[in-house]
Image 1 (spheres, rainbow, N blue to C red):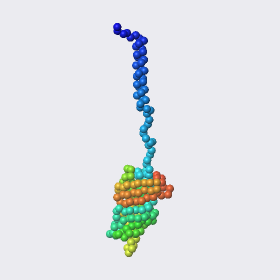
Image 2: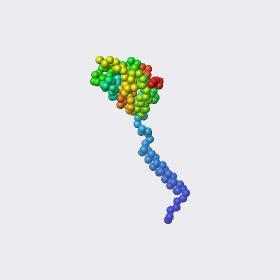
Image 3: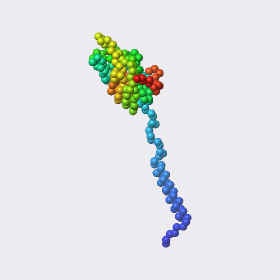
Image 4: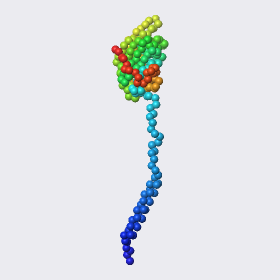
Length: 211
């Protein structure tokens, strides 16, 4: 005898099937557990000390020391700068730079004779471009001169147009900056700078370079 399935039986079967499906879905979701963010520790800015770039390095500085990479001719002898400096200022704004000295004192070496005093009265300046700590300094304007006193020869004046080659950063350079100062190392010279009092990053006006 062939069994018959009435409406009541079909309803019971459908209800049981639905309950089974719901149970299976619940088990699958329970195995996964609640979803959580797994990004780790929150991201934080890690800039640390300013490592270059014109915005970080703008401001007023005092030059504390110079290491010459080039020489300039003085009465047929090679002159370079190396050592501590007093009274020499370095300034940068967004596009321009300037070195300024009024009776600034630097240590020169002539023909291998060290500790010769150089008195700087003048300006060297120009424009620059920067990408990170990579800089390109262009020397565009100079004025004044530097005086060197040689024993047995007397005072010798060197025009700033010539002397800038051993005093100012020219060409490609790296510049790293901190809250206390900066270091510029170019093809012509290495400068150690300290922030001038009240001349923190970005506080200087445009350098007043003159020709």
